[in-house]
Length: 481
Image (cartoon, rainbow, N blue to C red):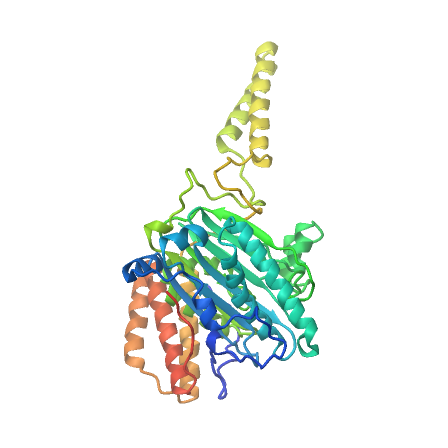
């Protein structure tokens, strides 16, 4: 039975899941604000406003978007920010596509919150200025200019001098998904049964692992702090921006942009299962709830996008998802059998004195063996497409496995939540929840773990919603699309 031993320490008399919309963050009256600081209205006007409302609705319906951010259980303020800018016409789609940004700020007092808000506001604004450039170059310039402005603001006032932020930007374009990335916030893509991490964590542990200075086992052990990042926007006048893609997009593909408050609490395998089995809004909510149930040590942001319109499918011919750069390949079973049979036959022929045949047979076995080894360790040059390829992503991939482990964990979580609710005399509508819980268990007994997990996830989400509401802490989250 799968069950993690995360303490449900959150469920004390003072517990609350406090949420805040990213549009309601304070401005702090920064006296250094210059003309480059966009208002919410300016950012919302970035997409063209076509005269035909049907056309506008059509382009917005090419994706389904769910975006939630949460302060977590141990933070006083939410330093995460996010932005969604959808193309509202064919012309805007062709030039710059749909844009999604997540930023995780850092710095004392209000500095981190201001830095992340500047990032999600300025990147779309700067990107829109370069609509005549290739999108990847426009994204790179937008992030670079945003870094320069955050750096300028930070050095103009002592209060904001230490501010910085991660910034992960996804553009869905006719040629596919293109990313600009700085920091350790992540962008995942689920295509079919496979989850791909499209971004490289600019963290000390990832950099040391990539340099061969630490093993994967040591990295997982937690000996090296995972929260030490090597790149961010703001601290320095110049920053190195990673470009990745384009990655092919197919109907039904899903993306997750998230801060490390989510990826640090939920495993990659769990992310794959949740993205595959739940619609975007429910997936985003479960990401937030699970992260909080496991301690919620940091702010949590989940931005989930699903490709729902045929117009968003990549237009590149023969586009295929590249394999992760460090993904191990298995030795060909067929070549292994041929090599083994030939070598055994060569030995037998040698014992019988048939040396010419033995030599020929052993050479054939050696050729099969070498061919198999070459296939494992040599990667042929990628086929060139009409679009330039940037970066080395995806960096990791995971199979969306059976939902049984996650179902078992949700079942244990449900029981813990009930105990906490009874202990604190919370008023919960148990009748309907128990009915759904029993149905989920019936499905699991029938080995239908996918549907059981879906139903159990909805039970947990609804129970937590009732707990938040009855304690006067109803969530206030942003949902787009």
